[in-house]
Image (tube, rainbow, N blue to C red; front, side):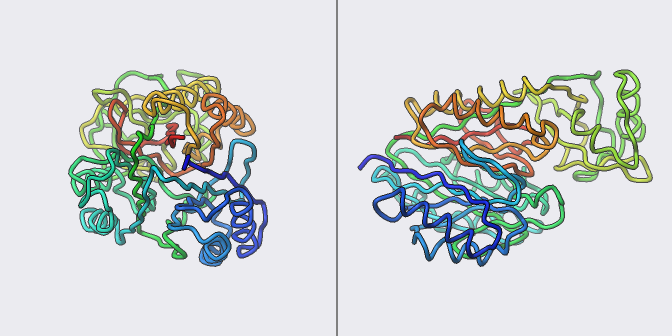
Length: 387
């Protein structure tokens, strides 16, 4: 049986009705019930009610997903909405697991997620991939990916992102079955006779001199080159003719993010706020002692990066895609505004006939051969499914 997919979207605002709408669209698009459904839903919904209605309506084998900060398919996009990708295939087998208390013990959370992964006990399928969604507000996403790699013996590729809440940065959820959980992560195991494709790319480049992280506490960047971190941003704003308001810095930060030097390029972090001591709090952790730059980009660079991510996913796939999941940062959507639609169109065009579903996330996850792995901000990640 060839792979069957359905990409669905709803603007229905009542939670149960939104779940039913998604489920009915899936049922009308597929001859039989789906093996797996991945759903992304705005933080405005009562997620338990939406998930229960969706599960009852289309009865998927497994159901996973996350709250989000902008939802889309290749044809529709919005905020305060919900979307889903349904997949059925004789070439793939799916399983799901979730881990709790990510903020306290990533190794234990990774062990919980992977406890039900069939590929750790059986080698009937050559290719092993997992979609990973985590509560990024719980922190430590980089370590979680490392612990998942250890738990799977390095035998799985990962793609996914951090759950969102419509850019409120207050409370996010991951979904497994009809459960919506905080301080948790969820994994969808995808075993396949054909390769899946993962593509990763960002369109940012250094816009400042090299800076050394001289004091940091997790995601709180305290000093650069021995001075309060905010001073480096203020000096950069003055040099480049931009305005940085300490009391409302996000408009500046969306265009001037941090790039951490790595052997494979810059890993990005989005600054969010400035405290009274001049420390800058970011969306994810920054390693102590690392070399960083203040980065710059453009709308065209973001579109080109998304295109390259989709193209890279197709190369890894080795053929056409039946469907793809696309993750990009909420900061990218906020920075681009309506022009974010051009990025979605570019991904859809690069993938061709494959259906696209995705969301804006609080960080993006990728770990695959030949790709820039780890936990990212402002980075396009594409996970493509074979036909």
